[in-house]
Image (tube, rainbow, N blue to C red; front, side, top):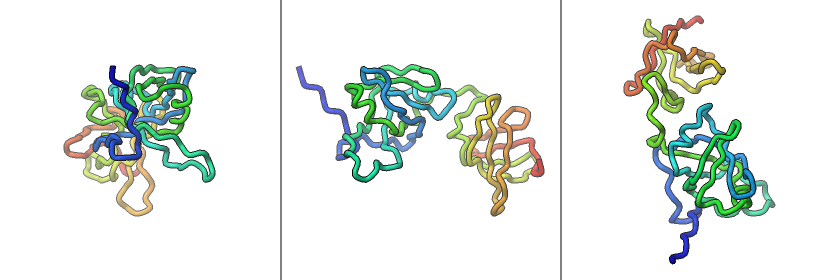
Length: 199
């Protein structure tokens, strides 16, 4: 029987490359249980992007470890997910590269990426936030509100944050609901809304 291959690390030529369409979908909160599971905080209220792929690409947190601290163990560049399930407000997962609780704890703070191409296909009237960022927003009169720079989750619905082209202009906040959103044209990179500039 052949010995198992060692897990890939982010240091070295054999590290798996981050896909060109990789999207950051969550952060590792730390170890879960005693058998090497991790708990991930998803960035979306519906964590389907995490469930849609068995390949999670892992990157270290932006904030480096403090000087003088113990050196971090090699990071797996890729987690091949064995199981994943919702647990409270997070997702608990096991992966081939995580052998025990210590290995899981060492991933605390890691950024989790998934290829956008692996996301489930949304319904006709549903959109992923990542696909809306950057789309140009204008109203039915042709007045430009600028690109979508983010969204706000309010509970009942989301709110588009559009940044007008005028310097120092405040963001325009538009409820992302059918009553105000006339068209979302992903190929055309634009959103048309029934909204006035002075609302």
